Image (cartoon, rainbow, N blue to C red; front, side, top):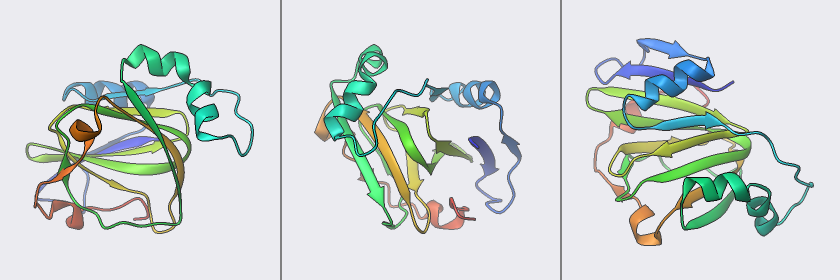
Length: 168
């Protein structure tokens, strides 16, 4: 189930609120320029190639206006958590699996659990991190305009280490 848990940075163990309804998630995140929505699933054959996955979602991808799309297909990897920022807005669409994006906005962290058919668009410059869990598995489209602008720059903040991850 998709959700957003809102934490104050001083209390990373206890969320102030947890929202599970799509409209509530979308409206809460929209207050900070973040877009969250659920797309209709496309017909995809098992073992589809990256180009077939992109083609299956061509119309909604084109509507977003991003110049580049890449497929991230991750099985059982766990990179370290680190807060980062990207110079340009970027989006993530989950074709399969799940992941937890945490967005650092002022004195709050918005932990957004995304799953199949969820789209999350993160504005340029917003501090965030991603946790795929101990045994991560997902297929995700990452949308961006330029490789350089979407390249994350670490903030140096260790905040990510204090907040619950996907498996917590």
